[in-house]
Image (tube, rainbow, N blue to C red; front, side, top):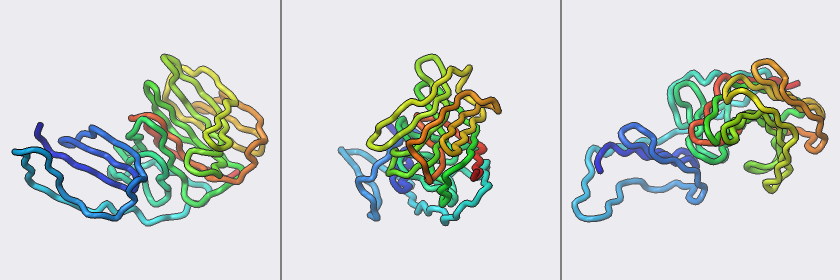
Length: 237
């Protein structure tokens, strides 16, 4: 095989490109760095040419206050922006959206706000086996302890769902309703014990739950390679 290889390492997000097209991506915290870089050859006759290297510099952290909105209109990048903390997973700015680049879970947390009551919105688009969620009252580590609300594709059907996670990957489904498709503007209101999910301005699911009183962080939870999110907004309530 031949072509132009590019290997991007941005924090714990690892992405491999061939001739400008992503061919593999992963998330790993095994080697936090720093470390050397270069070329590794295996076998006789292997050649390499036109090598370049550049540092990927994270954006300067910038705290967010309410209200906040982000259209993600900026150059493609391995980093979302200084307003966001990229935790587990692998996401990027691609064509003015936040793009999930792995099949597993990616969390992107808004920097600094830890509201008890909040209203968040985003435009999402999901495909087969994918899901896109807004999370609130996240007060655990990694993918633990929070409420999430969003859209999921299950088989050939789409659903709007609200879940609770109380830690140790213990998920409880609080509400589920069939929806006509996997794209649109979702809104998650988390106010006291009242949890409400809206799709394109219409409330499609609501439940009361007292398990996670808050406060906690808010942000995006993407599942599936190719899931996209656009036009996010947050308001403390």
